[in-house]
Length: 115
Image (cartoon, rainbow, N blue to C red; front, side):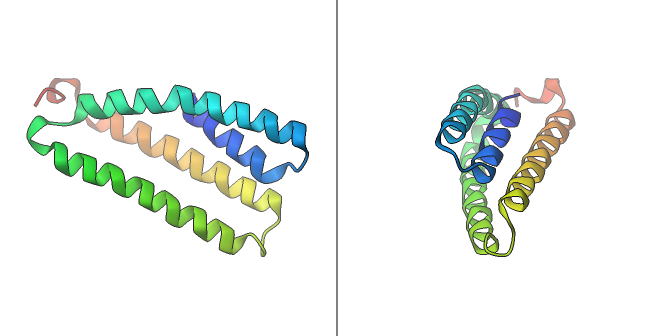
C-alpha cells in the first residue's frame, strides 16, 4: 500500500501543475513513504543473514543509484513526452517495483530467514 501511494504521489506531481494539487500529491507521497520505508527496512533486516550483511547493504545501496539513473533518464525524455507520458512511466515503474517485490518475497521461505 505504501509503494502504491508513493507511486501515485509522484505520478500526480509529474502530471499536475497547480499548487493545491501539488501540495495534495506531496501529502500522498509522504504518507506512502512513511508506510513503505519502515516496512522495507524491517523486512530487509529480517532477510539479511548476519554473515552477508555487507553484500546485502551494498546491493541495497545500488538500488538507489539505479533510481537516480532512471530519474535522470526521465529528465532527458521529458521534452519528448508530455506530463501524461512521464506520469504513466512513473506508474508503470511503480507497478514493476510492486510486482518484483511480491515475487521476491514469495521466493524466500519463512524457515530460511533465520540463517
